[in-house]
Amino acid sequence: MKPAVYFIGAGPGDPDLLTMKAYKVLQVADLILYADSLVPKQILQDTKSSAQLIATGNKTLEDILPLMINKVREGLIVVRLQSGDLCLYSAIQEQMKLLSEAEIPFELIPGISAYQAAAAKISTELTIPELVQTIILTRVSGNASAVPEKEELASLASHQASLCLYLAARHIHKSQIQLLKHYPADTPVAICYRVGWEDEKIIIVPLEKMAQTTEQEGLIRTVLYIISPALQKLADFNFRSRLYHPEHNHLFRPHSRSQKS
View 1 (cartoon, rainbow, N blue to C red):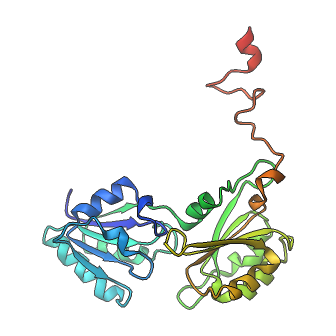
View 2: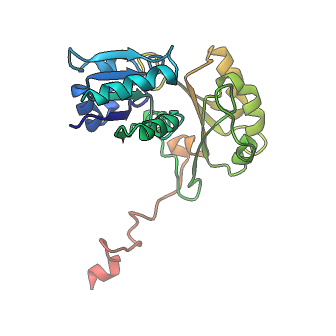
View 3: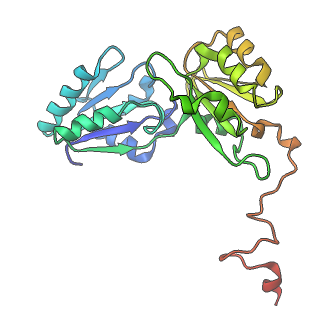
């Protein structure tokens, strides 16, 4: 494995959800910079004894970047361990830009996002035929990052898609008001706290009780909300996908009439 910076998505918290590629890189890394408030120590349990582990919760980009650059130039393997998946709210864009300018090679290794892990935990397919076929991943504006006006929550809610709302616990009353402009009040909402961690908690409530439940549970951070008609009880569904229907033919499964002839 060549000296480089390997950006790794650690997944939502469960070490078993690491990809095999991510696990193999972590085993040989010389320096691992990890987001300690979002990545549990269990993820690092199989790193080599000589690996240098540095928590980045109290550091800035100006602290982190020189470390990565210098270690790669020394011929070492560096890991930047992020929570969830790298393509969502990981703040790696500026890191990649500066590494490119310094001519430091890097590679991205994706991870499982919290919305995927949460949907699996509650046995839900977020795209149900004839009901919902779109998933929206979004957040509300906060101190660290502003959401563009054209992506206002109420505007996204107008699609009534399966909407996965990140980083919203501190703004939950405002978010609920925006969502109720388009979703029915009884739309199921999964309130997902620290998915994949030992103290994981997932509660499903009607949309009209989303803010109330969040406050009752004392949740202020590390919460994902999934708002979707797909969260109905399995017994309530009468839809069937055409994919495995006997009347649906495709390249690998000719029509049943063709099979009889």
